[in-house]
Amino acid sequence: SKAQGRNICHFFTDAMNLGMSRRLQIEEQLHGALAREEFQLCYQPLINIARRAIIGAEALLRWRNPRLGAVPPDEFIPVAEHTDLIIDIGKHVLSQAIEQVAYWRGALSPDFKVAVNLSPRQFRDTGLASFIEQTLARHGVPGNALELEITEGVLMGGHTHINDALVSLNRMGVHIAMDDFGTGYSSLSYLRSYPFDTLKIDRSFVGDITIDAADRELVNATIAMAHGLGLSVVAEGVETEAQLDYLHSRGCDIAQGYLFGKPVPAEAFNTIFGQPV
Ligand code: C2E
Ligand code: CA
Ligand code: CA
Ligand code: CA
Image (cartoon, rainbow, N blue to C red):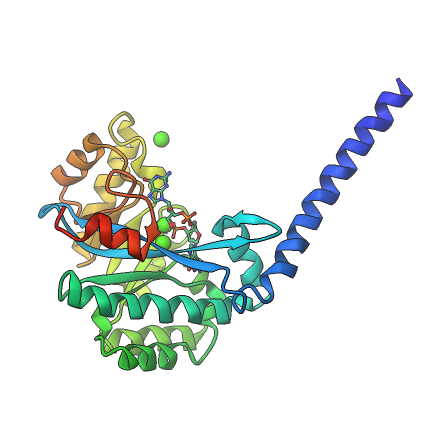
């Protein structure tokens, strides 16, 4: 009927308005979120598979806003990226993570490292490498305490100063990881052109390795190729012992996933992982 049609129309326009206003609300609330201290950094353990030992942690950002509640990073990071707010948020994340790894190097292990995600926009900031150098110096930690995780989005466009930044970070001993490997279009050509140390296999390839022969072949080939290039390999999204056993049998170096722990704040991380796994 006509009335029903109108209701359906209302339903769709409301849903669309809702969608738009959420994006706008996120943008509005994101301004000032740093000053209101609404961000918290969580850490997820990185496990050396052969030694079954924690060797580091990936820093993952959490945002809790009084109006919006907990907003997942997949939702707010793109907005932060689009509005350039990512520059200040990203510096905050780097400072916090570097301060934390300084503590862990003393308390847990002298070669503990922290991995930090960087967005394309942050890499286009010409001051990035010197900001990192100063922050490392301020906390008295060497470059090899830090690994920067980048996706191929950072490298798209091929700006020369991105390569310059990667080269000077590399000279400081900072490691560079290619994140979400296998999900993009040009990962192989970027591996050839930039100084990567680590390759992170996307969790979409790991989830089914015990049941899907094709995924297994892709993972096998990726590990072999990475090792051929002298890169260390991290498997993301490891949730079961069976997945871990398989990855171990193929010589995968590092595992990350719910099997070992979800991302948690530093205090909880210390309580849970204060002793060797
Ligand atoms: P990512 O870098 O690929 O991070 C891994 C994501 O997988 C995290 O989601 C993590 O919680 C999740 N994960 C880890 N282990 C498992 C598992 O065993 N099973 C499943 N199903 N998921 C697992 P999260 O924390 O929601 O982060 C999503 C994305 O947001 C990250 O993906 C990263 O791209 C971005 N992100 C998070 N923090 C930051 C940040 O500080 N800066 C930037 N630029 N991006 C960030
Ligand atoms: Ca990552
Ligand atoms: Ca990833
Ligand atoms: Ca599959």
